[in-house]
Image 1: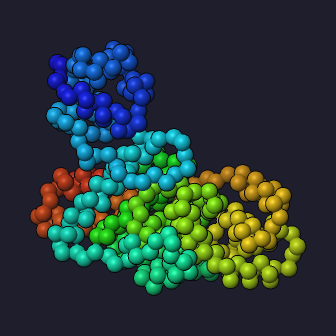
Image 2: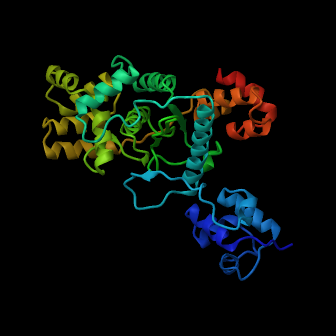
Image 3: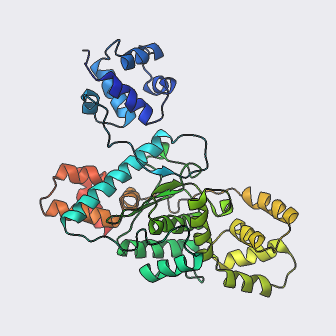
Length: 381
């Protein structure tokens, strides 16, 4: 059975997920489906059959009905500034992940507005021209954020994440739109992104990263919220002088929050050993950051010569990281809660209990099957 879809929408759907014609044919894996077929479908010279059309819609991450629209939809593709230092386009998995979280943000914003929520006065309160010390003061004053230098990066990440959510900033942590490792987004593509909305600001942090890097990303994206600048990042502490002005500013603020100059200088001066690597290892053990971060900070303060810096930079950069799973496989409800965020989940459940949305909509928003909803509710408390 042939289906009369809009060929222009079909082509748009493919391009919106950055897939080439070759990519589509490879992923569909049908012997009777060729590159020439897809070209003719997109040009309107031929019509696809029902089964193939459904496969294409699923691959493009859209509803089957979208392909029947008379014009190209305007509200599906993520509209977020791309601050990444990469020449490649976003992968299909990254696009689907962003679509999912943008859908969450738009839903909860609408829900909060309907419940008379007020704008958050700290969103957009600073600019990249604001003095770094003033920015740090405003962030700490608005949200009461403090780094506990007696605790590790995981403790600080969890503590700040909870603090942000208590201040109505949604913090999503994950790496896959469908919770499948095959669809995971690598940290080299996206470490995090921020949606700087005055009603429902969102931060995403890639869970595949190291604990130190996740903490840095969280602070970096928080600065985006305070600047009022929505965007995707893949910056690390070591890229502090390499990005555009916005990324560079966010990195400098995050760097000073995590490694305050006065504390760094005290540790550097008081550690007697003349061995630079030992000194860096010592300071890294005292602060919630990596050896590489300490190395870059020391270089910026003029404590390390160029040749030693390059030698240690290569050594620290080549350390392999493995994100270990303790005690077997991770809890799937825990993974979904982290991506959905506890706060978003509770708002969705409140809307359902108030009969404002259906059970189907509730489960779709939370990515939970109806018969598992009760168990999910227990796990998020």
